[in-house]
Length: 308
Ligand code: NCD
Image 1 (cartoon, protein in one colour):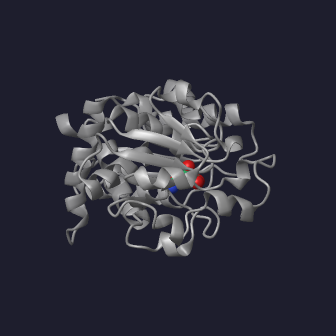
Image 2: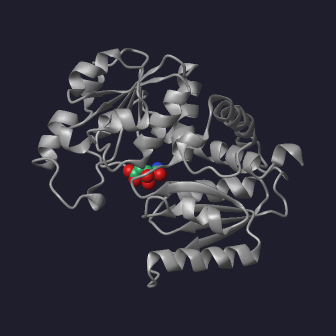
């Protein structure tokens, strides 16, 4: 098993499949009255969040606690020292406390990679800037496999603000490794020009959502990340929703079996309408549930739970 999980590219097909299979076992724990396993008793997991988060932070905390680890939540937001220094100083503190795993979210792309050089424990990237979010990609893959029975051969459209999306990048890497076909869809201003070649050669790009929908098994809507936009990438929210938002009529262009995903948090009315978000095709709530099982599997396997 790998030591750190920093990128979707850290996972080959066997490792990713082992994580998904382990997550399926972990999911049976969630159905029990006592949702706890002793696997990580005596181990310390630190959640180091330099950026806002609701579901990812809570999900990692629930996952570590269900494995009986000691959990320390460190919310670093508001720190006044420069980012590089503060991260290194914090890393040395965590090191001194004997953290076995550090789960880190940071606004700077690459921060988890730096951290991995400074601590002895395992580092899990819980989202770094616009770069990567590998456990989100794993929980998305888990959800697709659970709903559709397979990953190889699936056609997946990832729609919207690809430019700012670490979720999109990690999904492209992992889904390509697992044999799914990815099409990135959005306005030209929000799809980096060289992304196909840079990430995975086999991905497609389309600027026309309506033409893509009838041929996909999965449509994954991305949040329009206004907090990362210092420019205007589209004329207006209304215009964006008209061309790239998933509403009821568009959803009905999908094949019968197709599912709709969103990592959350949603801009309801912008990239997705409430009718779609709350429809039976939507897996948004399942994604959150599955996230806990997937993060349990990641922590368990990285910390050597299977060979102790
Ligand atoms: C995503 C993130 O923070 O990268 N959310 C999440 O982790 N569930 C996506 C987003 O913020 O749009």
